[in-house]
Length: 339
Image (tube, rainbow, N blue to C red; front, side, top):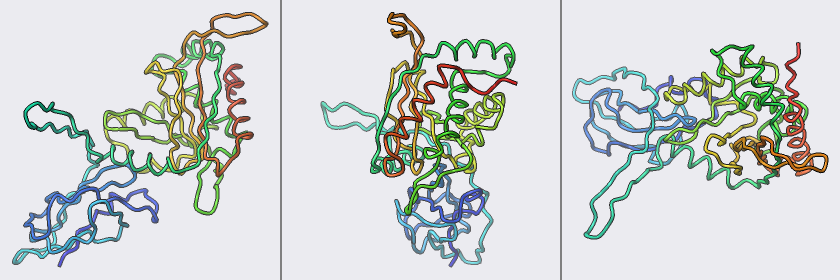
């Protein structure tokens, strides 16, 4: 018998205790397969991979069923090799670009054809992660930020950085978040079974919206990186995400996440925690809104921020202080860029 495994290359940069998900078997027990044939789909840290038959033969038994998880040394199935057959070395599977496999079926008379979006690939990984995160005791806090000073700073920096770097208010926000987290470290970390683990480095997950779902690549050591590096790294990761070429190393190790839906024009929203992280920040659109200063009402560009945090790890008062300090830092455009 020859065991069927997910190749070691699929586990690159994945921690030893992380398990993969057997998403779907494409063959049944008793099926005849060719060497290198795709026999199943699996997900490792939000990345889909094909499982390939190591030899020609017959699927004798399946050890890991659809929907079950497995480790890197697990045999997913066993193949009885064909006469004279030997284990082949199948090509290393490339991460599969997940796409909503829409299926329309003709129903009975009078029924309307509908699109079906299966919870597989990235969409399935997102669904499972969100369902798990929803069980956490989460609390949301909001703050409105006047962005006049940040937008003025953005205009100045554009001229200094040049057209090659596509600076946006999101990049200024990422730096402000990192600097503020350095002063409020209890929101910068993850929740484990035995308690919260506070990280010494600020590694920001930046949610990238794809047609198939959300992926959250990680920008590392944000608090100490120059703004130019934050811009270039976030751009690089977003491009890899849209091309379906993110590796496991680029998706792991985040300590706090930022989800920006401002481009959709919405004012605010409450994001779901990127479990096991302690907190996530939701960002709405920058728009002209009324503000009151010195007893007078005027129009100014503002942005609504929503901080969602795991109440097991931190209470409302320290979490709200962090959000208030972030608001004040942005309103002052205090990003530590002098010198």
